[in-house]
Length: 147
Length: 147
Length: 147
Image (cartoon, rainbow over the protein chains, first blue to last red):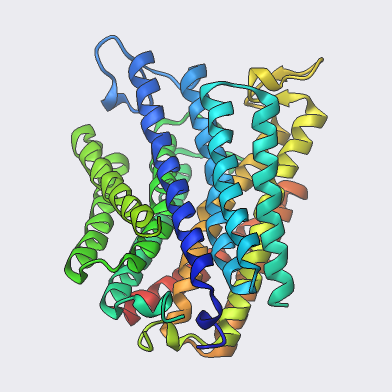
C-alpha cells in the first residue's frame, strides 16, 4: 500500500478535495440556473411539468444556452475529477499541483460566467482552453508516470 | 499518508462503494431502456442503425423522455460520485454517512421511476431535490473541512 | 485503514491509472473533433461564435454525429471511472483486473472510431457492448464484495 496511497501529499489532497467540491457545487448550480430560466420563460421539457401559460419547447435560446454550459461542464469537469485525483499519485510538486487545481476551478467558473451569464466568446474560449490544456497536461503526466 | 487515506472508516467506505456501484448499474440500465424504446418505436439516431420500417428522429417523446432521465443522471449522479467519495475524508459520523449514501441511491432510483417509467412530476421533483440537497450538503462539508 | 486502502495491489492501481488517463485524453479529444467539424461545416451553437459565412444550427449530421459519440462517452466512460476505481478494492486477480482495464480502454477507442470516424454500426455496437458488460461485471463484483 505504501507504494500507492502512501505517496499522496496531504497538502495536495486537501487542495484537490477543496476545489473539486467547489466545482461540484458550481455544477449543481447549473440545474438551478436551468430551472430559473425555465420558470421565467415558461418553457418546459416534460408534458407533466407545464405550468398554466407555459409550453413544451426545446429551442428556447436562454434555456438552451444554460443547458449548453451545463453540458460543457459535464464534458470537461467530470473527466477532470478523475484526472485531477490520479494526478495526486504522480508525485507532483506541491505548489504546482495546488495552483493547477486552483486554476482549473477558477477558469471553469469564468467559463460559466462568460457562457451563460455574460456571453463573451473570447473570454469563454480562453477559460475553456485553459481548463482543457491543464486537464490534458495532468492526464499526460499520469500516462507517463504509470507507463 | 495517515493524514489522508488513513482517516476513512471501513464501514463508511463499504457503504459508499456498495451504493455507488448500485447507482452505476442503474445508470447503465438507462442505455438499455433507451435501446428498448428505440427498438419498439423504430426510431434511431444514426443512419447506419435504421432497421427496415424505422426512421431517423430526434423528437420521439418516449425515446427523448428516457434520454432526459439519463442526462439528469449524468448531471446529478456523476458529480455525486466524486463528492460522495471525498465526503468520506471529512470524518463524518458513520451512521450519518451510511444513511446519506443510502438516501441518495434510493432517491436517484425513484427519480428514474417517476421520470421515465411512471411519470409523476411531484414525486420526480421530490426525488431530484432530495438527491440534490444531500449532494450539496456533502460538498459544503468538504469545502468547510478542507478550507 | 489497512482494511480499506491497504488492500489495493500497486500493479492494479497502475493499470487503472494509466488506462483511465488514456481514456480521459480520448474524451478530451472529442471536444477537438467537434470544434474541427464546426469549423469545417461553419455550423455553430452560440450566436456570439458565428464566423462570417457561418450559421447557427443544431442538426448538422457531421457535427451531431461527433456530439452523439461524445455523449456516449459520458454515459459509459464517466460511470466506468468510478466503477473501475472501486473494483480495485474487491481484491481482483491482478491479471484479470489489468486486462479488463485494457479491454475497456481499447473498446471505448474503437467505439469512437466506428461511430465518429468510420461509421460501422456492427463494430460500434460490439465495442459498446464489450465496454458496457465489462463495466457491469465490475459493478456487480463491487456490489457482491461490499454487500
